[in-house]
Image (cartoon, rainbow, N blue to C red; front, side, top):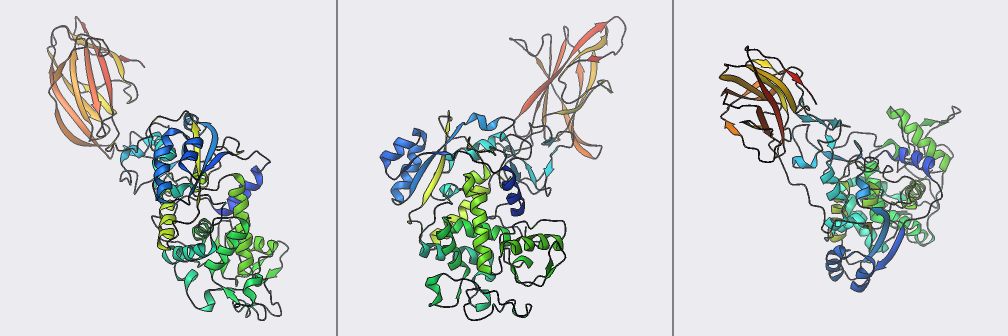
Length: 544
């Protein structure tokens, strides 16, 4: 958790859980389990055909032709694709969210947002239900299917959703790529040339960052052998490139996780000078670092800092390098050792052997892997690292659709429900927008017309009315259309659509059918039955 308010960038993943919570969660759910099955790693067209379903071939072959050093590992999830969309899997409220400016002003087209789950859409209020900060809405099943189907992302940019974070890349490429990433996303804290911005590997002097604060405690660090003779310090990019290589972590993904936690680096947990108390009341004046915010949780800045620095003290992270190394090891254990070594798997935990199948995810934003894939690609492209030996871990499901799941494109207000139907000025008793069939509207024998008023929950809905002697669900249904007048009205602070007409009563009239079509094309039907009696009266009952 960062200790300040940062301007949200479009490229940075939203809704990543606080790393401290991840560590706690990992400790609770970690158990011995079989790793997901890698069917094989393809480095040739023949191997692509051997390990992947046919619907994967064309996209992967094109990528291999452009980048002969790339490797594509087929990961057998052990799951049917349809299994992912059960209620106990991905289609649970708030498990998958989509960004929106507000509950009415959307970011994506409207079909990206759900209206079918209870609690996802407020039909009466004519708006989606907001979660978290009020700018995140429940994703539709169509959107989740699109984002989960790996075949939609076999292009040069989006393939980086599947870049394997458990495989380090060449150090020189990693250094340049991380520096580029820090410069673009993190700011000068990570890249400025002055010694104050570097990680000190001090062998003969105190760390100047906290010399003033600690008396008689030098806290020497242990530099890698190869750098002792070269100089006394490393840049952040160099340090992460070395750490990732040693721990077996893709260094660019490691750097992006660090940026997710620290942004531009302006944090008490990275300053080395923030005083804190141990649980026994002992005052520690400074000299400890927690770059990955491990255990940094609480309700106040002081509480967050204290918990994070206590963890750093327990781990012995008394230099910047030790904190980066130790935090990277935790990242490896929490993510990579649990089989979630790609952006895709960190969003969609679809390893059937996982003890956290479906529910252990590290972000709710379903487009987060796509956004982060873009800056991973951009970073490597800028340092001419796209031709490096990269490994991509790609999920394979059973019984996948023959063609990739389509991107949602339907737009417009989805509300196709009615607020009220009134006859001769009297609302139908007990009317509810989810009840569609009514019976027992009684007219007098000599009644020749009636006034009809229909109010839609959304002023964007279109209404058609038909008169008939047969039920609207009859096989050979035919109805006579009614000409309607339209206006907008305010009802309980909501803007509604109002359709009115003076309707003649034709001979044999038994049913009035009301077809409602939302702006996005979704539709539904209401209807009520007409009865006649000797005396003019108006009696009505309704049923489900």
